[in-house]
Image (cartoon, rainbow, N blue to C red; front, side, top):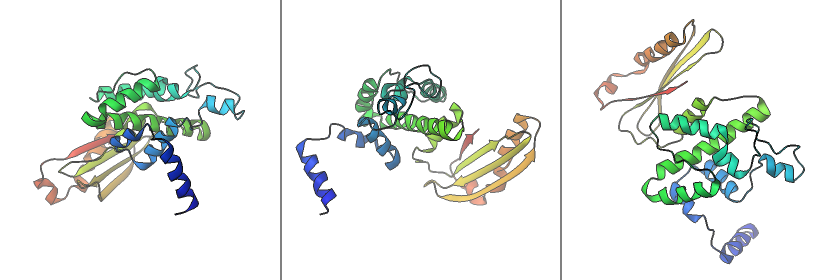
Length: 232
């Protein structure tokens, strides 16, 4: 064994990690590592940086007028609430919590009976954190609906039919239209795209939907159905 492995085993033997149940949520490795850092109070929130004299403010960069603590960035931030509200409108029963402790209790209770809800909440916090870093360091601001779509894209795809992902990008009067077809394992099959001039957003969305005709193969017509995934 390496020295690092022996040190890890020695530390693990001293006491059981109290959040071992978190693995029941089956998060992706990147998101799982992010939440491990949250549970260890090891993500650089504004308060974390301020207390180490690495920042001049403790306020949330999203303009919430509140200090950015672990409780804030996981449950209280206005951006997190906006994304959760969009997910609720889309039919996902996201819990209402006001602190990290309350959230952990909800995640613990649902890890067996409804682990999917727990995954969505964890992915939401992670995606909002990524959007926060993009906004703070690169001046890129993603809308709550885009963040919500990114959250759902991380979920497993247990479908028995091909998946059609279609999107529309609208910089000025130029529209980028695209669609991607995947099989039930999520494997890429085929894609199509167009660049057009548009004067109406609805027209651009309709033209994007029409691209489906360019990626449908004959064998797709014999399957049970299809899922059209919109990303605006």
